Figure 1 (tube, one colour):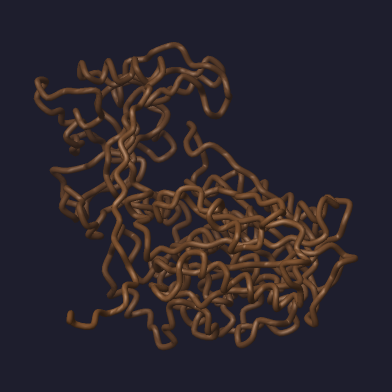
Figure 2 (cartoon, each protein chain N blue to C red):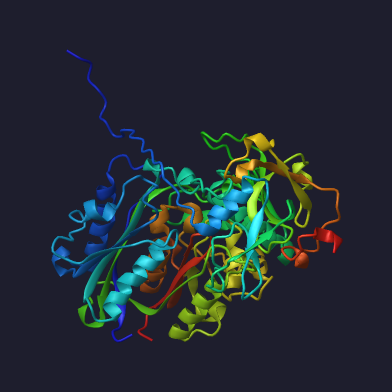
Length: 171
Length: 386
């Protein structure tokens, strides 16, 4: 006779999902240039704001965006968080900084890692620049940028964050 | 709206980390049975069932409404599933209310749930996107930078979030259904808890809960039950894109517009003065001062002052207690969290909120938000028809 067993209350049943992503014309062009190591956005013909990554329309105006704009890989920290929470299976070891970065020439931020910095000294308005992986490793991915790191440039005033031209602070 | 509608039945489960004694269907049925009993009706008296929950990816049960139809007594009746991310509990209640207000149905059962112990919300909210880096920071990772910007622009003292965390846990200790029971929590304990997503500490974040919340909403000529009905005086929803250039993320336009709409319906001109209490979706401590401003309880940049002076605290005798039930900071079955806010507002004006009752409450607000603070759902309920 087998040993009496405890009641079964939980059965683990993992679900795995793999998706095929149809990029559409605007993201396809964005990802294509990204593979060449170039960040691009699209300008809204109505409000003139430049979006990255471009999705082919302006979410605020609801009109198509067709004009590609080359952006800088320098940018400004709009905000950030220092992530210390341990998440099982996370390949990045905490603490790490997730920053909302607006690249020069764009009017909206994306998130990326910020590294080579003293975490406690990171601040809103700080200037940063992308550190790219070696060109041989580039794919259709924002992971082509390993992370952003601080630039030795003056901070950007809060009311100018997200409004710098592609030439950055020089203009 | 053509018809007046009211909440006549409320049922909630006890909120816990893990309910291994029941399936998802059993969890919902527990809340539903309590709501039906509270309304003194049976399934036979229900015309339609409106169910809501957060993303299917959480528990990995796709379209749970199809398998739940029999457990919810929906055989041969209209059944509808609602989804608007974290605000879904609120929007589900509004969809249910609207079906009664429009005259379509006399009595609607509405229920929302989450069984977080069977899910991994952190990963489900961090799915890789082809045009973005995959940083696995979860909801806290998304909202922490927005909170940082609020602190910068308002100049709020760093301990405001800590005060909210303590206040809501002390409220929750009055509510036997609340998941976290921390009657003796101190500001020092919150301050010393681990910084998860700077500036958010462990004790400034909501827990992961299992639970369900249900309500019976009835037309004026179909009121049942022995408790007073909570009359629905206004309902509003608004949404906006997650991201657009110049989007006001700290003080979203959709939230302001939604509040203005629901206040106009209920004849509210000064929410702090006109309302007796509010149940507002605050999953991270700093969202109390942020929503105090977004919802017009305080001028922009000054919401934190209400928190600081105890205006939102039942224990401090504040004039506008927020989240007397303990709020999302005490219980967070995600899909149900919004409906709990709506139901707890109704409990207050029915005079049925037990130890967390605001004495003499006549008019209360329920609020939920979701997505990247882009979906808003609000209602005002009153002891009077208005």
